Length: 266
Length: 282
Image (spheres, chains in turn brown, purple):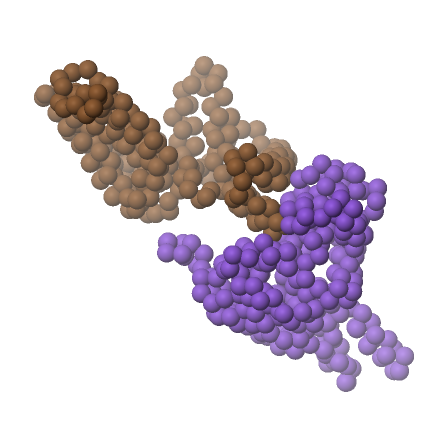
């Protein structure tokens, strides 16, 4: 039940994509998103999809695993597809009952579906192939210029990494408490939606208490090591660009140019 | 009427990269009223094994039958009435406004008693865990660690289970809290003939309490015997990442100096007795 959440989940591996610098991965996926939104060309979008599938293949993450992130947005995709197909103006193609399907509508539906798919696959590939720690490191480095206008970049990155770090911990904790209350006779599966929601109180109260306790402990631990954040901190793992990053960005930029060609030609 | 485990195997994350066999081909029977200690190194499968007893985990192959109920059957509610389970750090499961209500939770969920009947049972469970009356109306979160632990165990005892399983019940308790807990468990076992199964990695604890010891190693039962026999083969225990109680090592050392000093000593009390004999008759 809870195992379906893929947010911030890292899929261990040793591929080129895993080894690439997080900054490179973040920037590349952002570029991909920008292009996917700028272009209106069907060929460009299809190329983008092929490209992201190839990227997943190169990362050796199982394709089904990478597409798992699509499950929750499937409803949104279906919704937009249906709306676009039936309610777009343009050249009529055929008519079902009172609804007219237009040629433009179908095209727009396909484009939207492709866009969302590339978007989700691209961004989940970044989180699947980067450990949470490296990911926040990368984000912090990228946001560094914002420090000039007094944005607490380090603190934001710190909060993100703590949040990501605690997802599996809290998940495990939830499982444990569910088991303990089940053993005492709690029943989470029967009854209507209100009864079900109420049956989760014996899980949520202990979970909140333990979350606060953990937060407290962590704060004490940081405090007692004189954690001060930001200035003059060094890292155990320095982010360094390597040849892999050159190759990855090279391949990626080439792919992006390829995607843009049909846009200019037609 | 007993626990029967036949060729039980359990695999976590089946058919993925992270597949791991936690329990492999275990067959054993536990009779009513036994005091069983399950010991084993971290990851030896002890917690996995006990979670099969009330159907929280289902066997991937083999079967588990408790008092004639197969854990795979639909009578899971009946099964959970028979088997009470106290998890590690049970105080983390407290949630009600008062101690009284928290103890009552399991009772309300599993049985339909009148207010009076419930009250009798709740007070009896509290008494068994030596929870005083003035604590009953307090919030469970105001209590000390040891008190919380006792409240949580009372919340399991309240349904009067025939079989009580405790996973590391003394972790984080001070010596006094530990002794009190074991006294209460002895009492329950003696008066109600409740089967008590304790999972632990402290040899001292298990040696003093259990009359049967299951040593788990790599998902299988490596030894199934009495404490006396289990602690005889120290080398074998050590090869499984375990050890005998400290007094057993001490007895061995003494027997090297004093002839005929018994080496089968596993509790401090027995050691004191033997030493007194030596002192009195030099």
